[in-house]
Image (cartoon, rainbow, N blue to C red; front, top):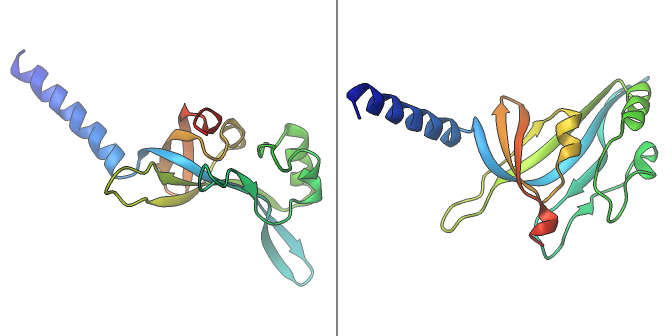
Length: 158
């Protein structure tokens, strides 16, 4: 192998390692999915979650935290994943000033490593593609994330 080929290979490996290490691309577990809305009322602006699904361990399994808003009540519930259909998305957008889809992800636990978590906003298509407990590869960009692949579905691990 000539010197240029070696330098190119080493540079590629180093760049891939840096993007993973510094948070641009991560393999993470989805521990929370939520739909957050902004509502403008006479007495001010309110920001709240209309649905919040969490998963912190295989023992507890996934659950909904708090109340699920009426607009989502027929689609989600105990045992059902948090997925927002086109019709429901339109209804939410008509009802509220702003609708955002968020996830909280944590690094996959390894021995002797601390678990780092972060929240980010994602597109509804990515939001619907994943479920809490899934292990995914995510590309972070500031406060936004993009799912690049689903590595392992929770239902196959539990």
